[in-house]
Length: 418
Image (cartoon, rainbow, N blue to C red; front, top):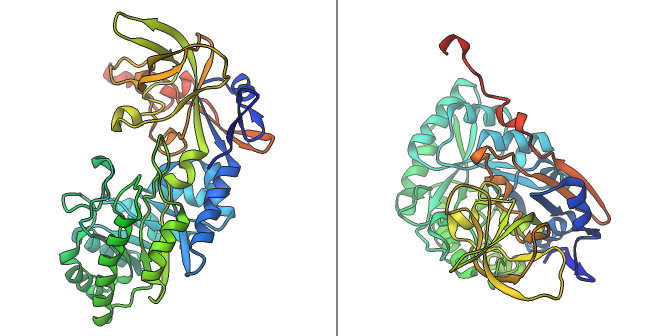
């Protein structure tokens, strides 16, 4: 659920007319609802209250500092996949002892940075990484706390690009070899094994895949206990989906009801890493209609937001509901909503039945709070969009719109070579 609703035919973000935000900040514009973010975090906290747990928000979904600060103030941790995300999380006030670090390609510098900041643990993805972390911990005279990310070979029934728990995936350690890797980890002097981790993918809309994966992980957990490897944290990852079109994903309570009976008698804490299900429906992207174009075979709404602002439709063929900011009584037509980028793949929607909006009107791209701005770029030398946070009848700019000067601020013309 979210707080983007129509009042007398006009779209509001909580208690603020979206048109008011457009008039002040322009378009393309990302708008986030504080109330929705809070509601979704509380849904997870209440769902898993029966067992000791830490919610580690997946920073990759939306890494704006203001949003991270909201989570920090609620005592939420962070699931990070880069040194930059660690920097953001700490800057926002998230406690390092609630930060877990995943990702297959951690660099020497990132490992050292995380060790110096005393994060909760690394989710280790390979044998080579295990040795590397041990080496870096030794050089810093520290102990690195780790979980091994185990690949349970589960099909989460999602897009192939965001399925991460299959045997063919680059992520994690094959579950058949996990016990051997744990024994290696136990033998390393600057490594302390404290956890087990799995993450099978994103935008998952059934609890069955989570249950199957957890059962496999807990079977390994029991084998580890017999080897005197005490696991303090069982990290089940994230991946719970949201409604973009007609999906009916489980509520966090449904997920908890499926998983808690499996784990409630195990020692230690549960770690959950939600991302999309927290921020996805908490944000929209607003865009201005620049032109209406008709050809012999197609109708187009050409808008000022492109694939550089929201790449999900181009990259994944993803569906985002698109609504007029102001509803009027007028005919509908089937059209493509396309941006200004010089690529045929630059579209926000294809063959979509929409109100016949005119140039100068505005459209809202819904469910854009996750992997929207976070995946945006400057392709075609386009400045990235502004971001705004709304709380009740108040709002604030949380990221300035980039300028043309911002596009080149880190570039250098080497006069000695030219």
